Each structure stands twice: as structure tokens, then as C-alpha cells.
Length: 54
Picture 1 (cartoon, rainbow, N blue to C red):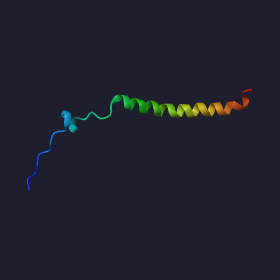
Picture 2: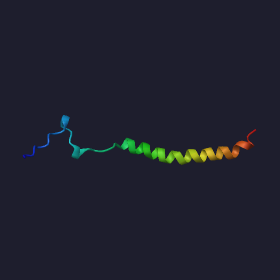
Picture 3: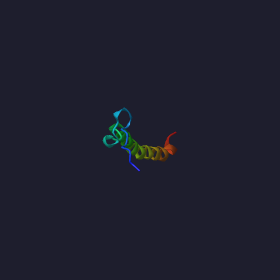
């Protein structure tokens, strides 16, 4: 049985040169990770102060 050489990917794309996720995606995840505790803290402060707001 003879092995056939692998055909090149369509449109000249090379899987070994895949740049991976772009920097925009990583930045979005960072903002999400930083914003979640901030939003939680803000909600906790508002709930603690709510009884004193007329």
C-alpha cells in the first residue's frame, strides 16, 4: 500500500503558520475578567447603601 502525499490546504492556508486568536480577542477576555469583579463590588455597595436612600 502506497501512502499519498497530503494535499495542500485550500486557498494556500498553512496550518503550521496559524497565528491563533488575534489580540483583540485576548483583550476582550481581559476586560471581561476585570469588569466582572468591579460590577460585583458596585452591586454590593449599592445593595448595602439602598436602605439609607430615601
